[in-house]
Image 1 (tube, rainbow, N blue to C red):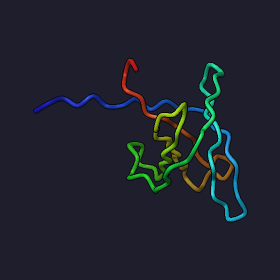
Image 2: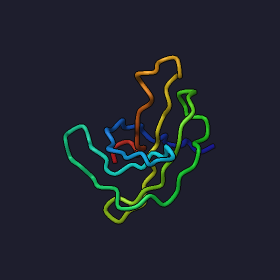
Image 3: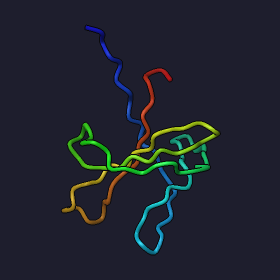
Image 4: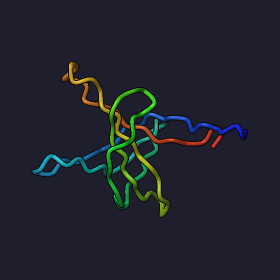
Length: 95
């Protein structure tokens, strides 16, 4: 059986807009070192399969620098109204 390398979760800051229906539209990804990556296009949005954390979330397929990436929104427990959720991207270790 082949060992699978698991992607790393990298938590990031994301600038987002909300439209009048409540749809959350990510606009840019801000890396921890301050680099900003504008999101050129959102190609797809879907509920994410149960995340490893056991939380529900959403997966956005986005275009950044002409390349397709998956951006995840991990929802927090509704008991904590001040903390709605957080964003992460997955990357291969060392990548």
